[in-house]
Length: 238
Image (cartoon, rainbow, N blue to C red; front, side, top):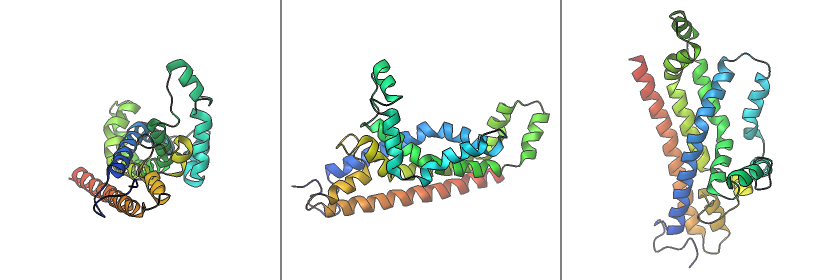
């Protein structure tokens, strides 16, 4: 029987469950690892006044306009076992990133990073600067102002950015397949599993099930983002 065969059209096979589970794991780690850097980058772009700000903004948004395959190739050059950073990681710590699920998480994080930063930046820019100035006049340090005033007021945007990045990570294909290949049980996430099933005779049913699952997960993430943002905004207004 093929990888997509099952007794029921909509009953998920172990192959499909494995792909969904791996996709969820990759997306969660992608968001967890990139969120602190995303918040810091968004804060620099929203509040910073320094030389190179436009360059930083361009670098952050490059993955949105570059072909995902190019991003995957650059990650392979940088983090592959013979790459500039990957060789050092392997020789020093025995860590291999390329062709592993960790590499899939990094590829997903890079592709989702612009969406995360943009949502958080817009939320930061919406915070009234007078509230921050009032906190500073009361003796609060810049970091304390950020932690107690700016970030709490920006929480809806932070949540939105994290969930959008999660949804984007679930659907990442081009950079992932270029950087970590399509290895069953290791890097074969949901979109890669759909691709594999479409290349397999009789795999159309399995591909349809995964496509439906992908749509449900993406819509659920978007609805959750909207509901969380509304709830947090209402609580802050109250």
